[in-house]
Every structure is written in structure tokens, then in C-alpha cells.
Length: 397
Image 1 (tube, helix red, strand yellow):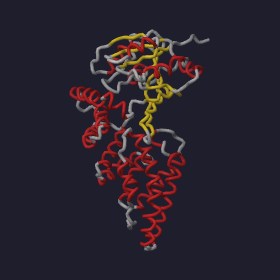
Image 2 (cartoon, one colour):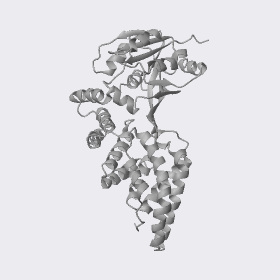
Image 3 (tube, one colour):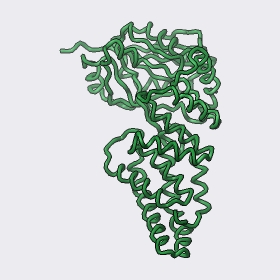
């Protein structure tokens, strides 16, 4: 019979009185010890942590998240460590499932599903991060920002030791009110710039900085850093496709459609079934009234969505958009058919009355799904709005 494995919750917090208790409550029945590291709260966060039964420690903020995380690890007395942020809540899981994970002797740490809640009409984005791992001194966080422990665990176990757990954390830190109230841009960009002084060509830091600027609607500045990140990447990085997608979205937002189509075509030569790229290029073709090329991309997208069983970020558009995309494609094909018949009066009628309705619905749904996947808010909405107000007559491509 297995000895019961113990678990410590580790959190670093600052001014989190509005969400701290929800995070703790979501894991209370799974944990034996609560470790809360406060980095300088001016609200009631420390008092709430103590009232919840946590062991509270104070840590002078050094603008390095890994230093704070590793200080927390040194306070732990349990067999396993579960890491949460104060703006995260663990979805319900049975004790049986949880302890099965802890008793797997072949696993040193687990990736958890992270569901980033973006807000009304923006859906969610998903990620996977190691947040549950054995308490061993050799396992330490690395990186001043967007800190990770996975690389350390892999190095210590010859590239092995990690698995994916059926656990999901709901993360609310990307909601607009929290981004503004916590002034995360100033904090995060400051940390990244400091690290880039020491390592100016680090692609992950450049990627993170680009996303920070995107979230501030500084698209040109963000695109500059993302493009530089790409130059220094091998293509094997786990975030490589995210960089490609966000560069594409930057070109779209800046209305650099020629660069966008060229860039996406190169990306599709590497990832021919990547749904986000197909949708973006098809949308650009559509905006140029190049209906035949748009139909090719949308047909391919629909075929992938019908045949895929994946629930990954790149494919999670399939169920949401299937019916709308099918309707839009029917109208596109009708438009192409009447072009061939040279019946331009009918073409114009379809473009103004049928095609625009179908496309508006399809594009709105697709855009929301794509925006959610890319963590970039509102990037496509301007283009969609154009379809709501007007639709050009079909032109032969």
C-alpha cells in the first residue's frame, strides 16, 4: 500500500485581496500545507492568507519571479509542490484522481492545462505549464519572467520525468480590469528589458516583450520584437508557432496584406494544416475579393476541422465554426459560379445580400476563436466590421 503523499500549495502574492481566497479554496482539500510569499502588499492580502491557515513569509521584491518562486520552494515540507497564482482557480478534481498522479513513481512533475479567460466575446486561450512536481532541492524555477521549472526537471532526469495531468487551472489575470489595475505592462516590460540587456538575442524574452506591446495596442513595436525573436529561433521551440501566428496578426493589424500573405504562405509550407494560418490567409483573400483563393483555404480549413479529433489551441475552432463556415463557403461558391457565367448583376446581388450575412457570422465566430488562441484582443475586429457595413461586388480573380 502506498504511503500517503503530502502536497504544499506555493503562491507568491502582492495586493491580491480580491482573489486570494478563491484560489486557496479551490485546492484546500488537496493540500496539506499552504505557503504564501508576500512581496509587498498594501491591502489585506497578508491578513487573509493567515486567516486561511497559510504560513506567511515576506520577500523583498527583486524584479525576478524565479527568485521569489525558489524562496517559496525552500519553505516547503511536503512531498509534492503545487504552484498557483492568486488569480487562478483549480477546476474540481476527485481525490482519487489526484492521488493517482502523486503515486506514479515514474513521474517527477506534471503539466497542468491553463485556461486563460479573456473576457466577454473573447473566449479563452489554453496553455500547458508544469505546476505540480516533487519537492527536490534540484528542482528550481528559471527565468526572471514567465518562469519555468520544466527545463530543470528534464535536465535532472535525462529528458524524462514529465507527464500531462488531467487538471485545469482557470486563469483570470488577462481580464482587462486586472491588467489595468495591476499595471502589468510596466512591471513585465521592465523586467524583460532588464534581462535583454544581459541577453539581447534571447528569443523567448523578445517574444514575451512583443506580446506585452500587443496587449498595449502598440502593434508596430510588438511586431518588431517578434520579428527579431524569429531570427534567433531554431524552429524547435514550443512557442515557435505562437511567434509565427502573432507576427501574422501584426501584419494584419497594420494592414500590410502583401507581407501577410507572403509570410503566411511560408508558414503554411512548414505547417500545411495549421488552421489559424489558413483562416487568416483566406480572410485576406476574401477582403481582396479573391473568392476562389479564399474558397480553397476555407475548404481546406473545413476539411481539417471535420477530420480532426484534437482539442489543441490550433484546432479548437472546429466545432464552433463548422456550420457558419459551411454556409459562407456555399455563398462563395455561388459567387464564383455566377462569375463564370458572367452574370455580374446576380453576382452583385449575392455579394450585397447573401454573402455578407454568411461571412459576417462566420468571421465573427472565427475571429473570436482565433483571438482567444493568440491571446491578442480585438486584432481582427476592424476587418470584421468592414464586412458588416459593406461587401464589394465579386470580381474575377
